[in-house]
Amino acid sequence: MKLEYDKKVDAAYIYLQYPIKKGEAKKTIELNEQIILDFDKNSKLIGVEVLDASKLMRKETLLEAHPAIIQKKPSNLQAN
Image (tube, rainbow, N blue to C red; front, top):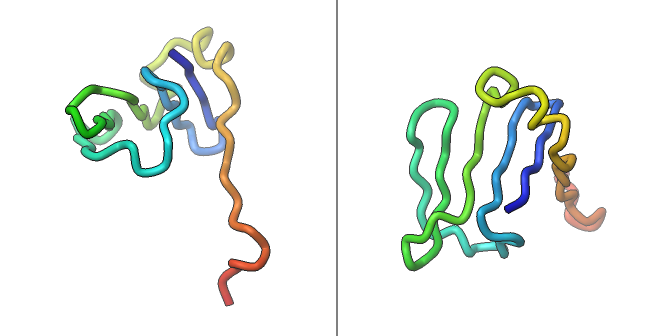
């Protein structure tokens, strides 16, 4: 299990399987406005997104989390 936290948007992602490859999450269920579940093709839970994480998770847990990695577009794909 791996926990990432993006302080700028106050969102955490709990990887139950790491890494999750692009396109591997085949189904997403929004439990409520803050909790989103990702499932693989076999309906196995592989990740949990937590929005407003600082309100829902312990501060100590978020401090121990890995910083979220933001994927940037290659410079040749920039919008015009």
